[in-house]
Every structure is written in C-alpha cells, then in structure tokens.
Image (cartoon, helix red, strand yellow):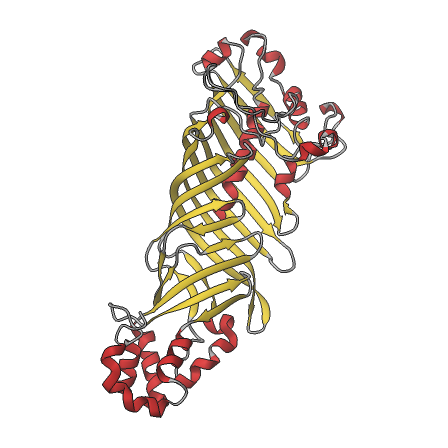
Length: 481
C-alpha cells in the first residue's frame, strides 16, 4: 500500500523538477543551447521556482548524435537555506540531503529543437535515493521542498491562494466562448501545475525510499528498495483534461515496514510487513477541477508468496475483553495471529490517492492456519495511522477442531458441538466469521461477530439450549454463512 500511495505523487514532483532543469522554454536556436544548459543556470532557475537548494555535479548536452540527449549527474535537492539563489562559487558543499539522483537522462524531441523548443521524449531516473518524513499534522517534509520559494509565496494575493486553473481555449472559433477562467500569472511556472508534455516514456530504475512517521501516536519506518517503475501511454492535455488525463504504470519493489505496536500491555518494536510486490495500473495524474497534479492510481498488485503481512499481534492482543465473552462458549481465539507469511500469492486491486489506499475488490489472503478475505471498500491511511477493514476469517481444520472441542467442553457434547460449529461454516466446511478492524495501525481494535451469533443461537444457558438443538438443526445449517 505504501508504494502506491507515496510514489505516484513523488514521481510528479521529480518530473516537474526535471522538466524545469531541462529548460522547457523557447530559445533562440539549437546552436546556442550550450550557453544556457550548464550547471549554474539550471540550478538558479530551479531555485527560483521551488523552496529548496539544488546541486548538480555535471550537465552534458549532446545535440549532434541520434537522438539528441541531456544528462544531469549527481542531482541533489535539500532544504532551502541562505545560500539558495547565490552563485555556486559562494556556496559551501551540501551534507546529507533528502533527495538525490545519480543520473537523470532525457532523450530530446529533434523536431522541437528545430523550432527552438526543448522537450524531453524519454526520461530515465537512475539511482534515485529518497528520505522522507510524514506526519498527520505537518504532512510530507519532501513535498514542502517543491512548493514556491518564500519570495513567491509573499507575492501571492489572498484571492490567489485558491488553486488556479489553466485557461482552456474553445475547440472551434464558431462555438461560444466559455465563461472566463482565472489564469496563473505568466511568471508562475510552479512544477505542480499540469503542462502538456511530449513524453512517451518515463522510467525509474533501482530506486531506494525511506519513509518515516515519528509522531507520538503513529511511529513507523518504511523502506522500499529495488524499486523499478515504467510509465508509458502518456496522454495529458490540460486543454482537454476530461479526455486526456492518463498514463499506464508497471512497477516492482521490495518493501519493509517497521513500527511500534502495543503487545501485552506495552509498546514494542515490530515488523508490520516484509514483502515483494509487482504489478501495473492506470493513473489519472491531474485533478480535473483544479488542473493541479494530484495523481489517483488504480493498481493491480501481486504480493509474492512467503511475503509477511502482520503476524506480530494475536486477536487476543487486539480484541481484549471482546473475546472474554466467547469463553463461556468454549471458543478461545486469543492465540490466533493476525497475519503472517503468505501461503499463496496475494492479488489486490486498490485505489491510491494522497495518503490513502482503498480496496476496489475483495482480497483473499491465504495463511498457514486460516484464510482471510479483506472486503471491498476497506482502507488504510498510513500518514494518519488509521484504518477501516471489514474482513472474514476462514479457520483451517486444526483451528476448527479447537473450537469444536472448546464448545463440547461446555456441556453440549461432541456431536451437538460439531453441528453448532458446522452451522457457522461455509460450503467448504471452514468455520467462518467476520472481524472488523479499526483504529490505529499500532493498536487496532478487532471485533469478531461470532459472539453475537452464538448468543442468538445458544443464549446464556447452554444446557437448556442443547435439548432443542438436534431437532432444529436442519433449519440452522447455513443460516450464518
């Protein structure tokens, strides 16, 4: 989930910076491009538009090979300081930075060069390394680097604080003109605005992300390695965003998520996930109402077998006194672990937007002792440390037998107990019941519905109920599936 939520937005931040550094501005001719495409010019142009300090090791422009290309080596982006905007000779070296790229490579559109424009056709980002901190209140520290610099923010009028749309021209002169649409000032080249790109392909190769949330109530550290992303079928046109707001993605990565969880009455360091994931999807990158970059990604992902999802916490840790009510029926679910290593590949279909991932279809997790279906419309929000999951747990044979013996030990006898448990089983004979999971990731609240069903079926007096169960059981079979 973390991958889909964070990377689509970060990609556009990086894309906006690269296009800015590629001087996507009319120039007087290809033969004088070299006068503009050098380190100092590109760095100062970038720092006029984003709230950061930028560093480049080297810039290489090749015009007389096929295809013409631009390479940026050793790109670093750091928090803005008093040296941003100054000549490079007056700056001290940068230390640790939240974002760096070993090499950014662009193939240029030859026809555009002939018409005094400089547009990338293919972009490759190699060796991307990102450190980001997020919190429910402050949001993303990385995102702040790509906001307008202080002097631009100070010049924005109060009425301009609302995101501005890009003006759209009528398709044909004969049609009535649309109502006026507020336009951004000509000098505003904010990289968050949708612009028409002549791009055919973008790729990120061997990227590494470290994402941390250290707020008191939601501490976690995520690491995404061996991340590869390919973007194709790019079709973005702000003049017709309804029909042209799409691209296709393919991705693969390894992801680890560590954090703090309350186990046994105290907070402990645990591993929430350790997985290998790959998949593809479609992205609508622009909000059609504001024409601002706000990617919404519909992703079909596969999490590989033997990946670990949860498993650090038992239902007893999470459900508390909810399970005490089941003990009078001999049902002890306290030792069941929530999650664990996957016994089969897990296919999921999610919508990732901003900080939230929502399940678009049911997802079926097969674990060693049981299976779980996560119902459609369940969701995670990692930045807010919140979740809303509706799941159904299917017990394996060993776990089902444990429940049968537990109920029998309360006075119903083996045969009647087996019939009672079968009444809660699905067509495959698996004992099945719903679990709702809400609250924080570190301290979820788990509520099983089986307790309500047992009370409706058996009430509090098991011996009296047992006398009438055999005669009425045929009508009960399948009642609670």
